[in-house]
Image 1 (cartoon, rainbow, N blue to C red):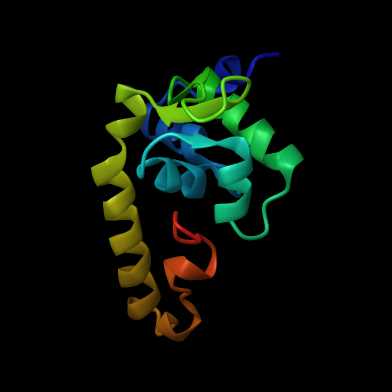
Image 2 (image 1 turned 90 degrees about the vertical axis):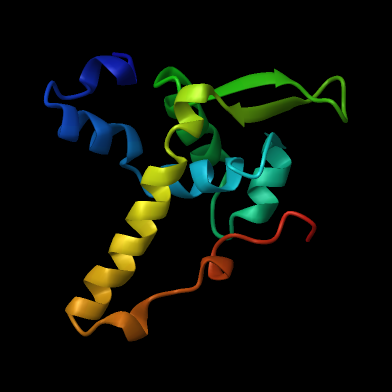
Length: 125
């Protein structure tokens, strides 16, 4: 069964269903920097396996958040980029980051928060 068919009917649950998964929000956050090849995404996201990355990218593509295009650098390669629908998540992801920090602080757990750089490497690295 396709991923899109398993999304809940309630809008808030649907939104969470699209974003749920260990790496989807991180992948979307990285793609906010612009198109990325699969190998570049692997290098930038610490701890993600190629298998999981491809599974998550396929789900995000099915949800209309990312699209694939031939690479501008390597004509045989593929780049992933945010669609306009995926780009519309920018303020939501920023708000989720802010709320996550607020939540940790409110529960006296801020010392466990990781900086973004702990998982996402700089694009030039």
